[in-house]
Image (cartoon, rainbow, N blue to C red; front, side):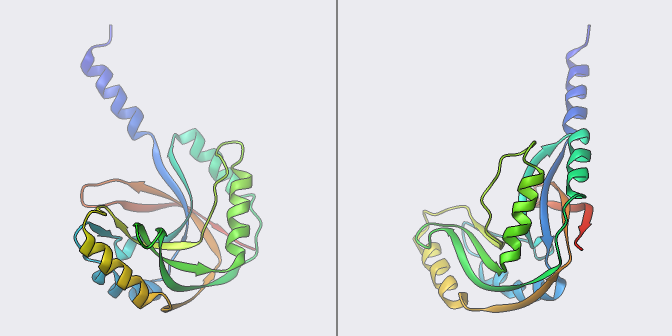
Length: 197
């Protein structure tokens, strides 16, 4: 008979064997440095800015994957054939609306992003549902919408930076990343990089 303690340890091993994964395009350090001052401006009550090191463009969140699932995903991603492209990083906005901002972001403009997202959704169709995609860099999440002063400051922040231009990025690959949740914030690590043609 398995003791309660043994069951608990077994459960811990099963959880640790899973990887919390997402698909992303990296942002160069030069662009991150230009975005960094905006993160300081967003140091407001009820707002959590993204760490400069963690800035990226999420193509698809996969959730927790076991080793076998992870290997299958990597195999599927190796079949994607797409040409390199460049995209511009410019213009601050938010989801879902400026009156109720939950996520503050910077737009990333290029139709090739939609093609890349479509390719990723297509190869993952047997494993994951298709999702809509809008290319953006999340820079902050609003945790508390009850503070009217914070809402007003976010609206002014968006108006101030809606036309800011941060630069153009050559996109030559995408990455499969793991996110480890910590009290101090998420820690990201790259599992594999998938290069374009």
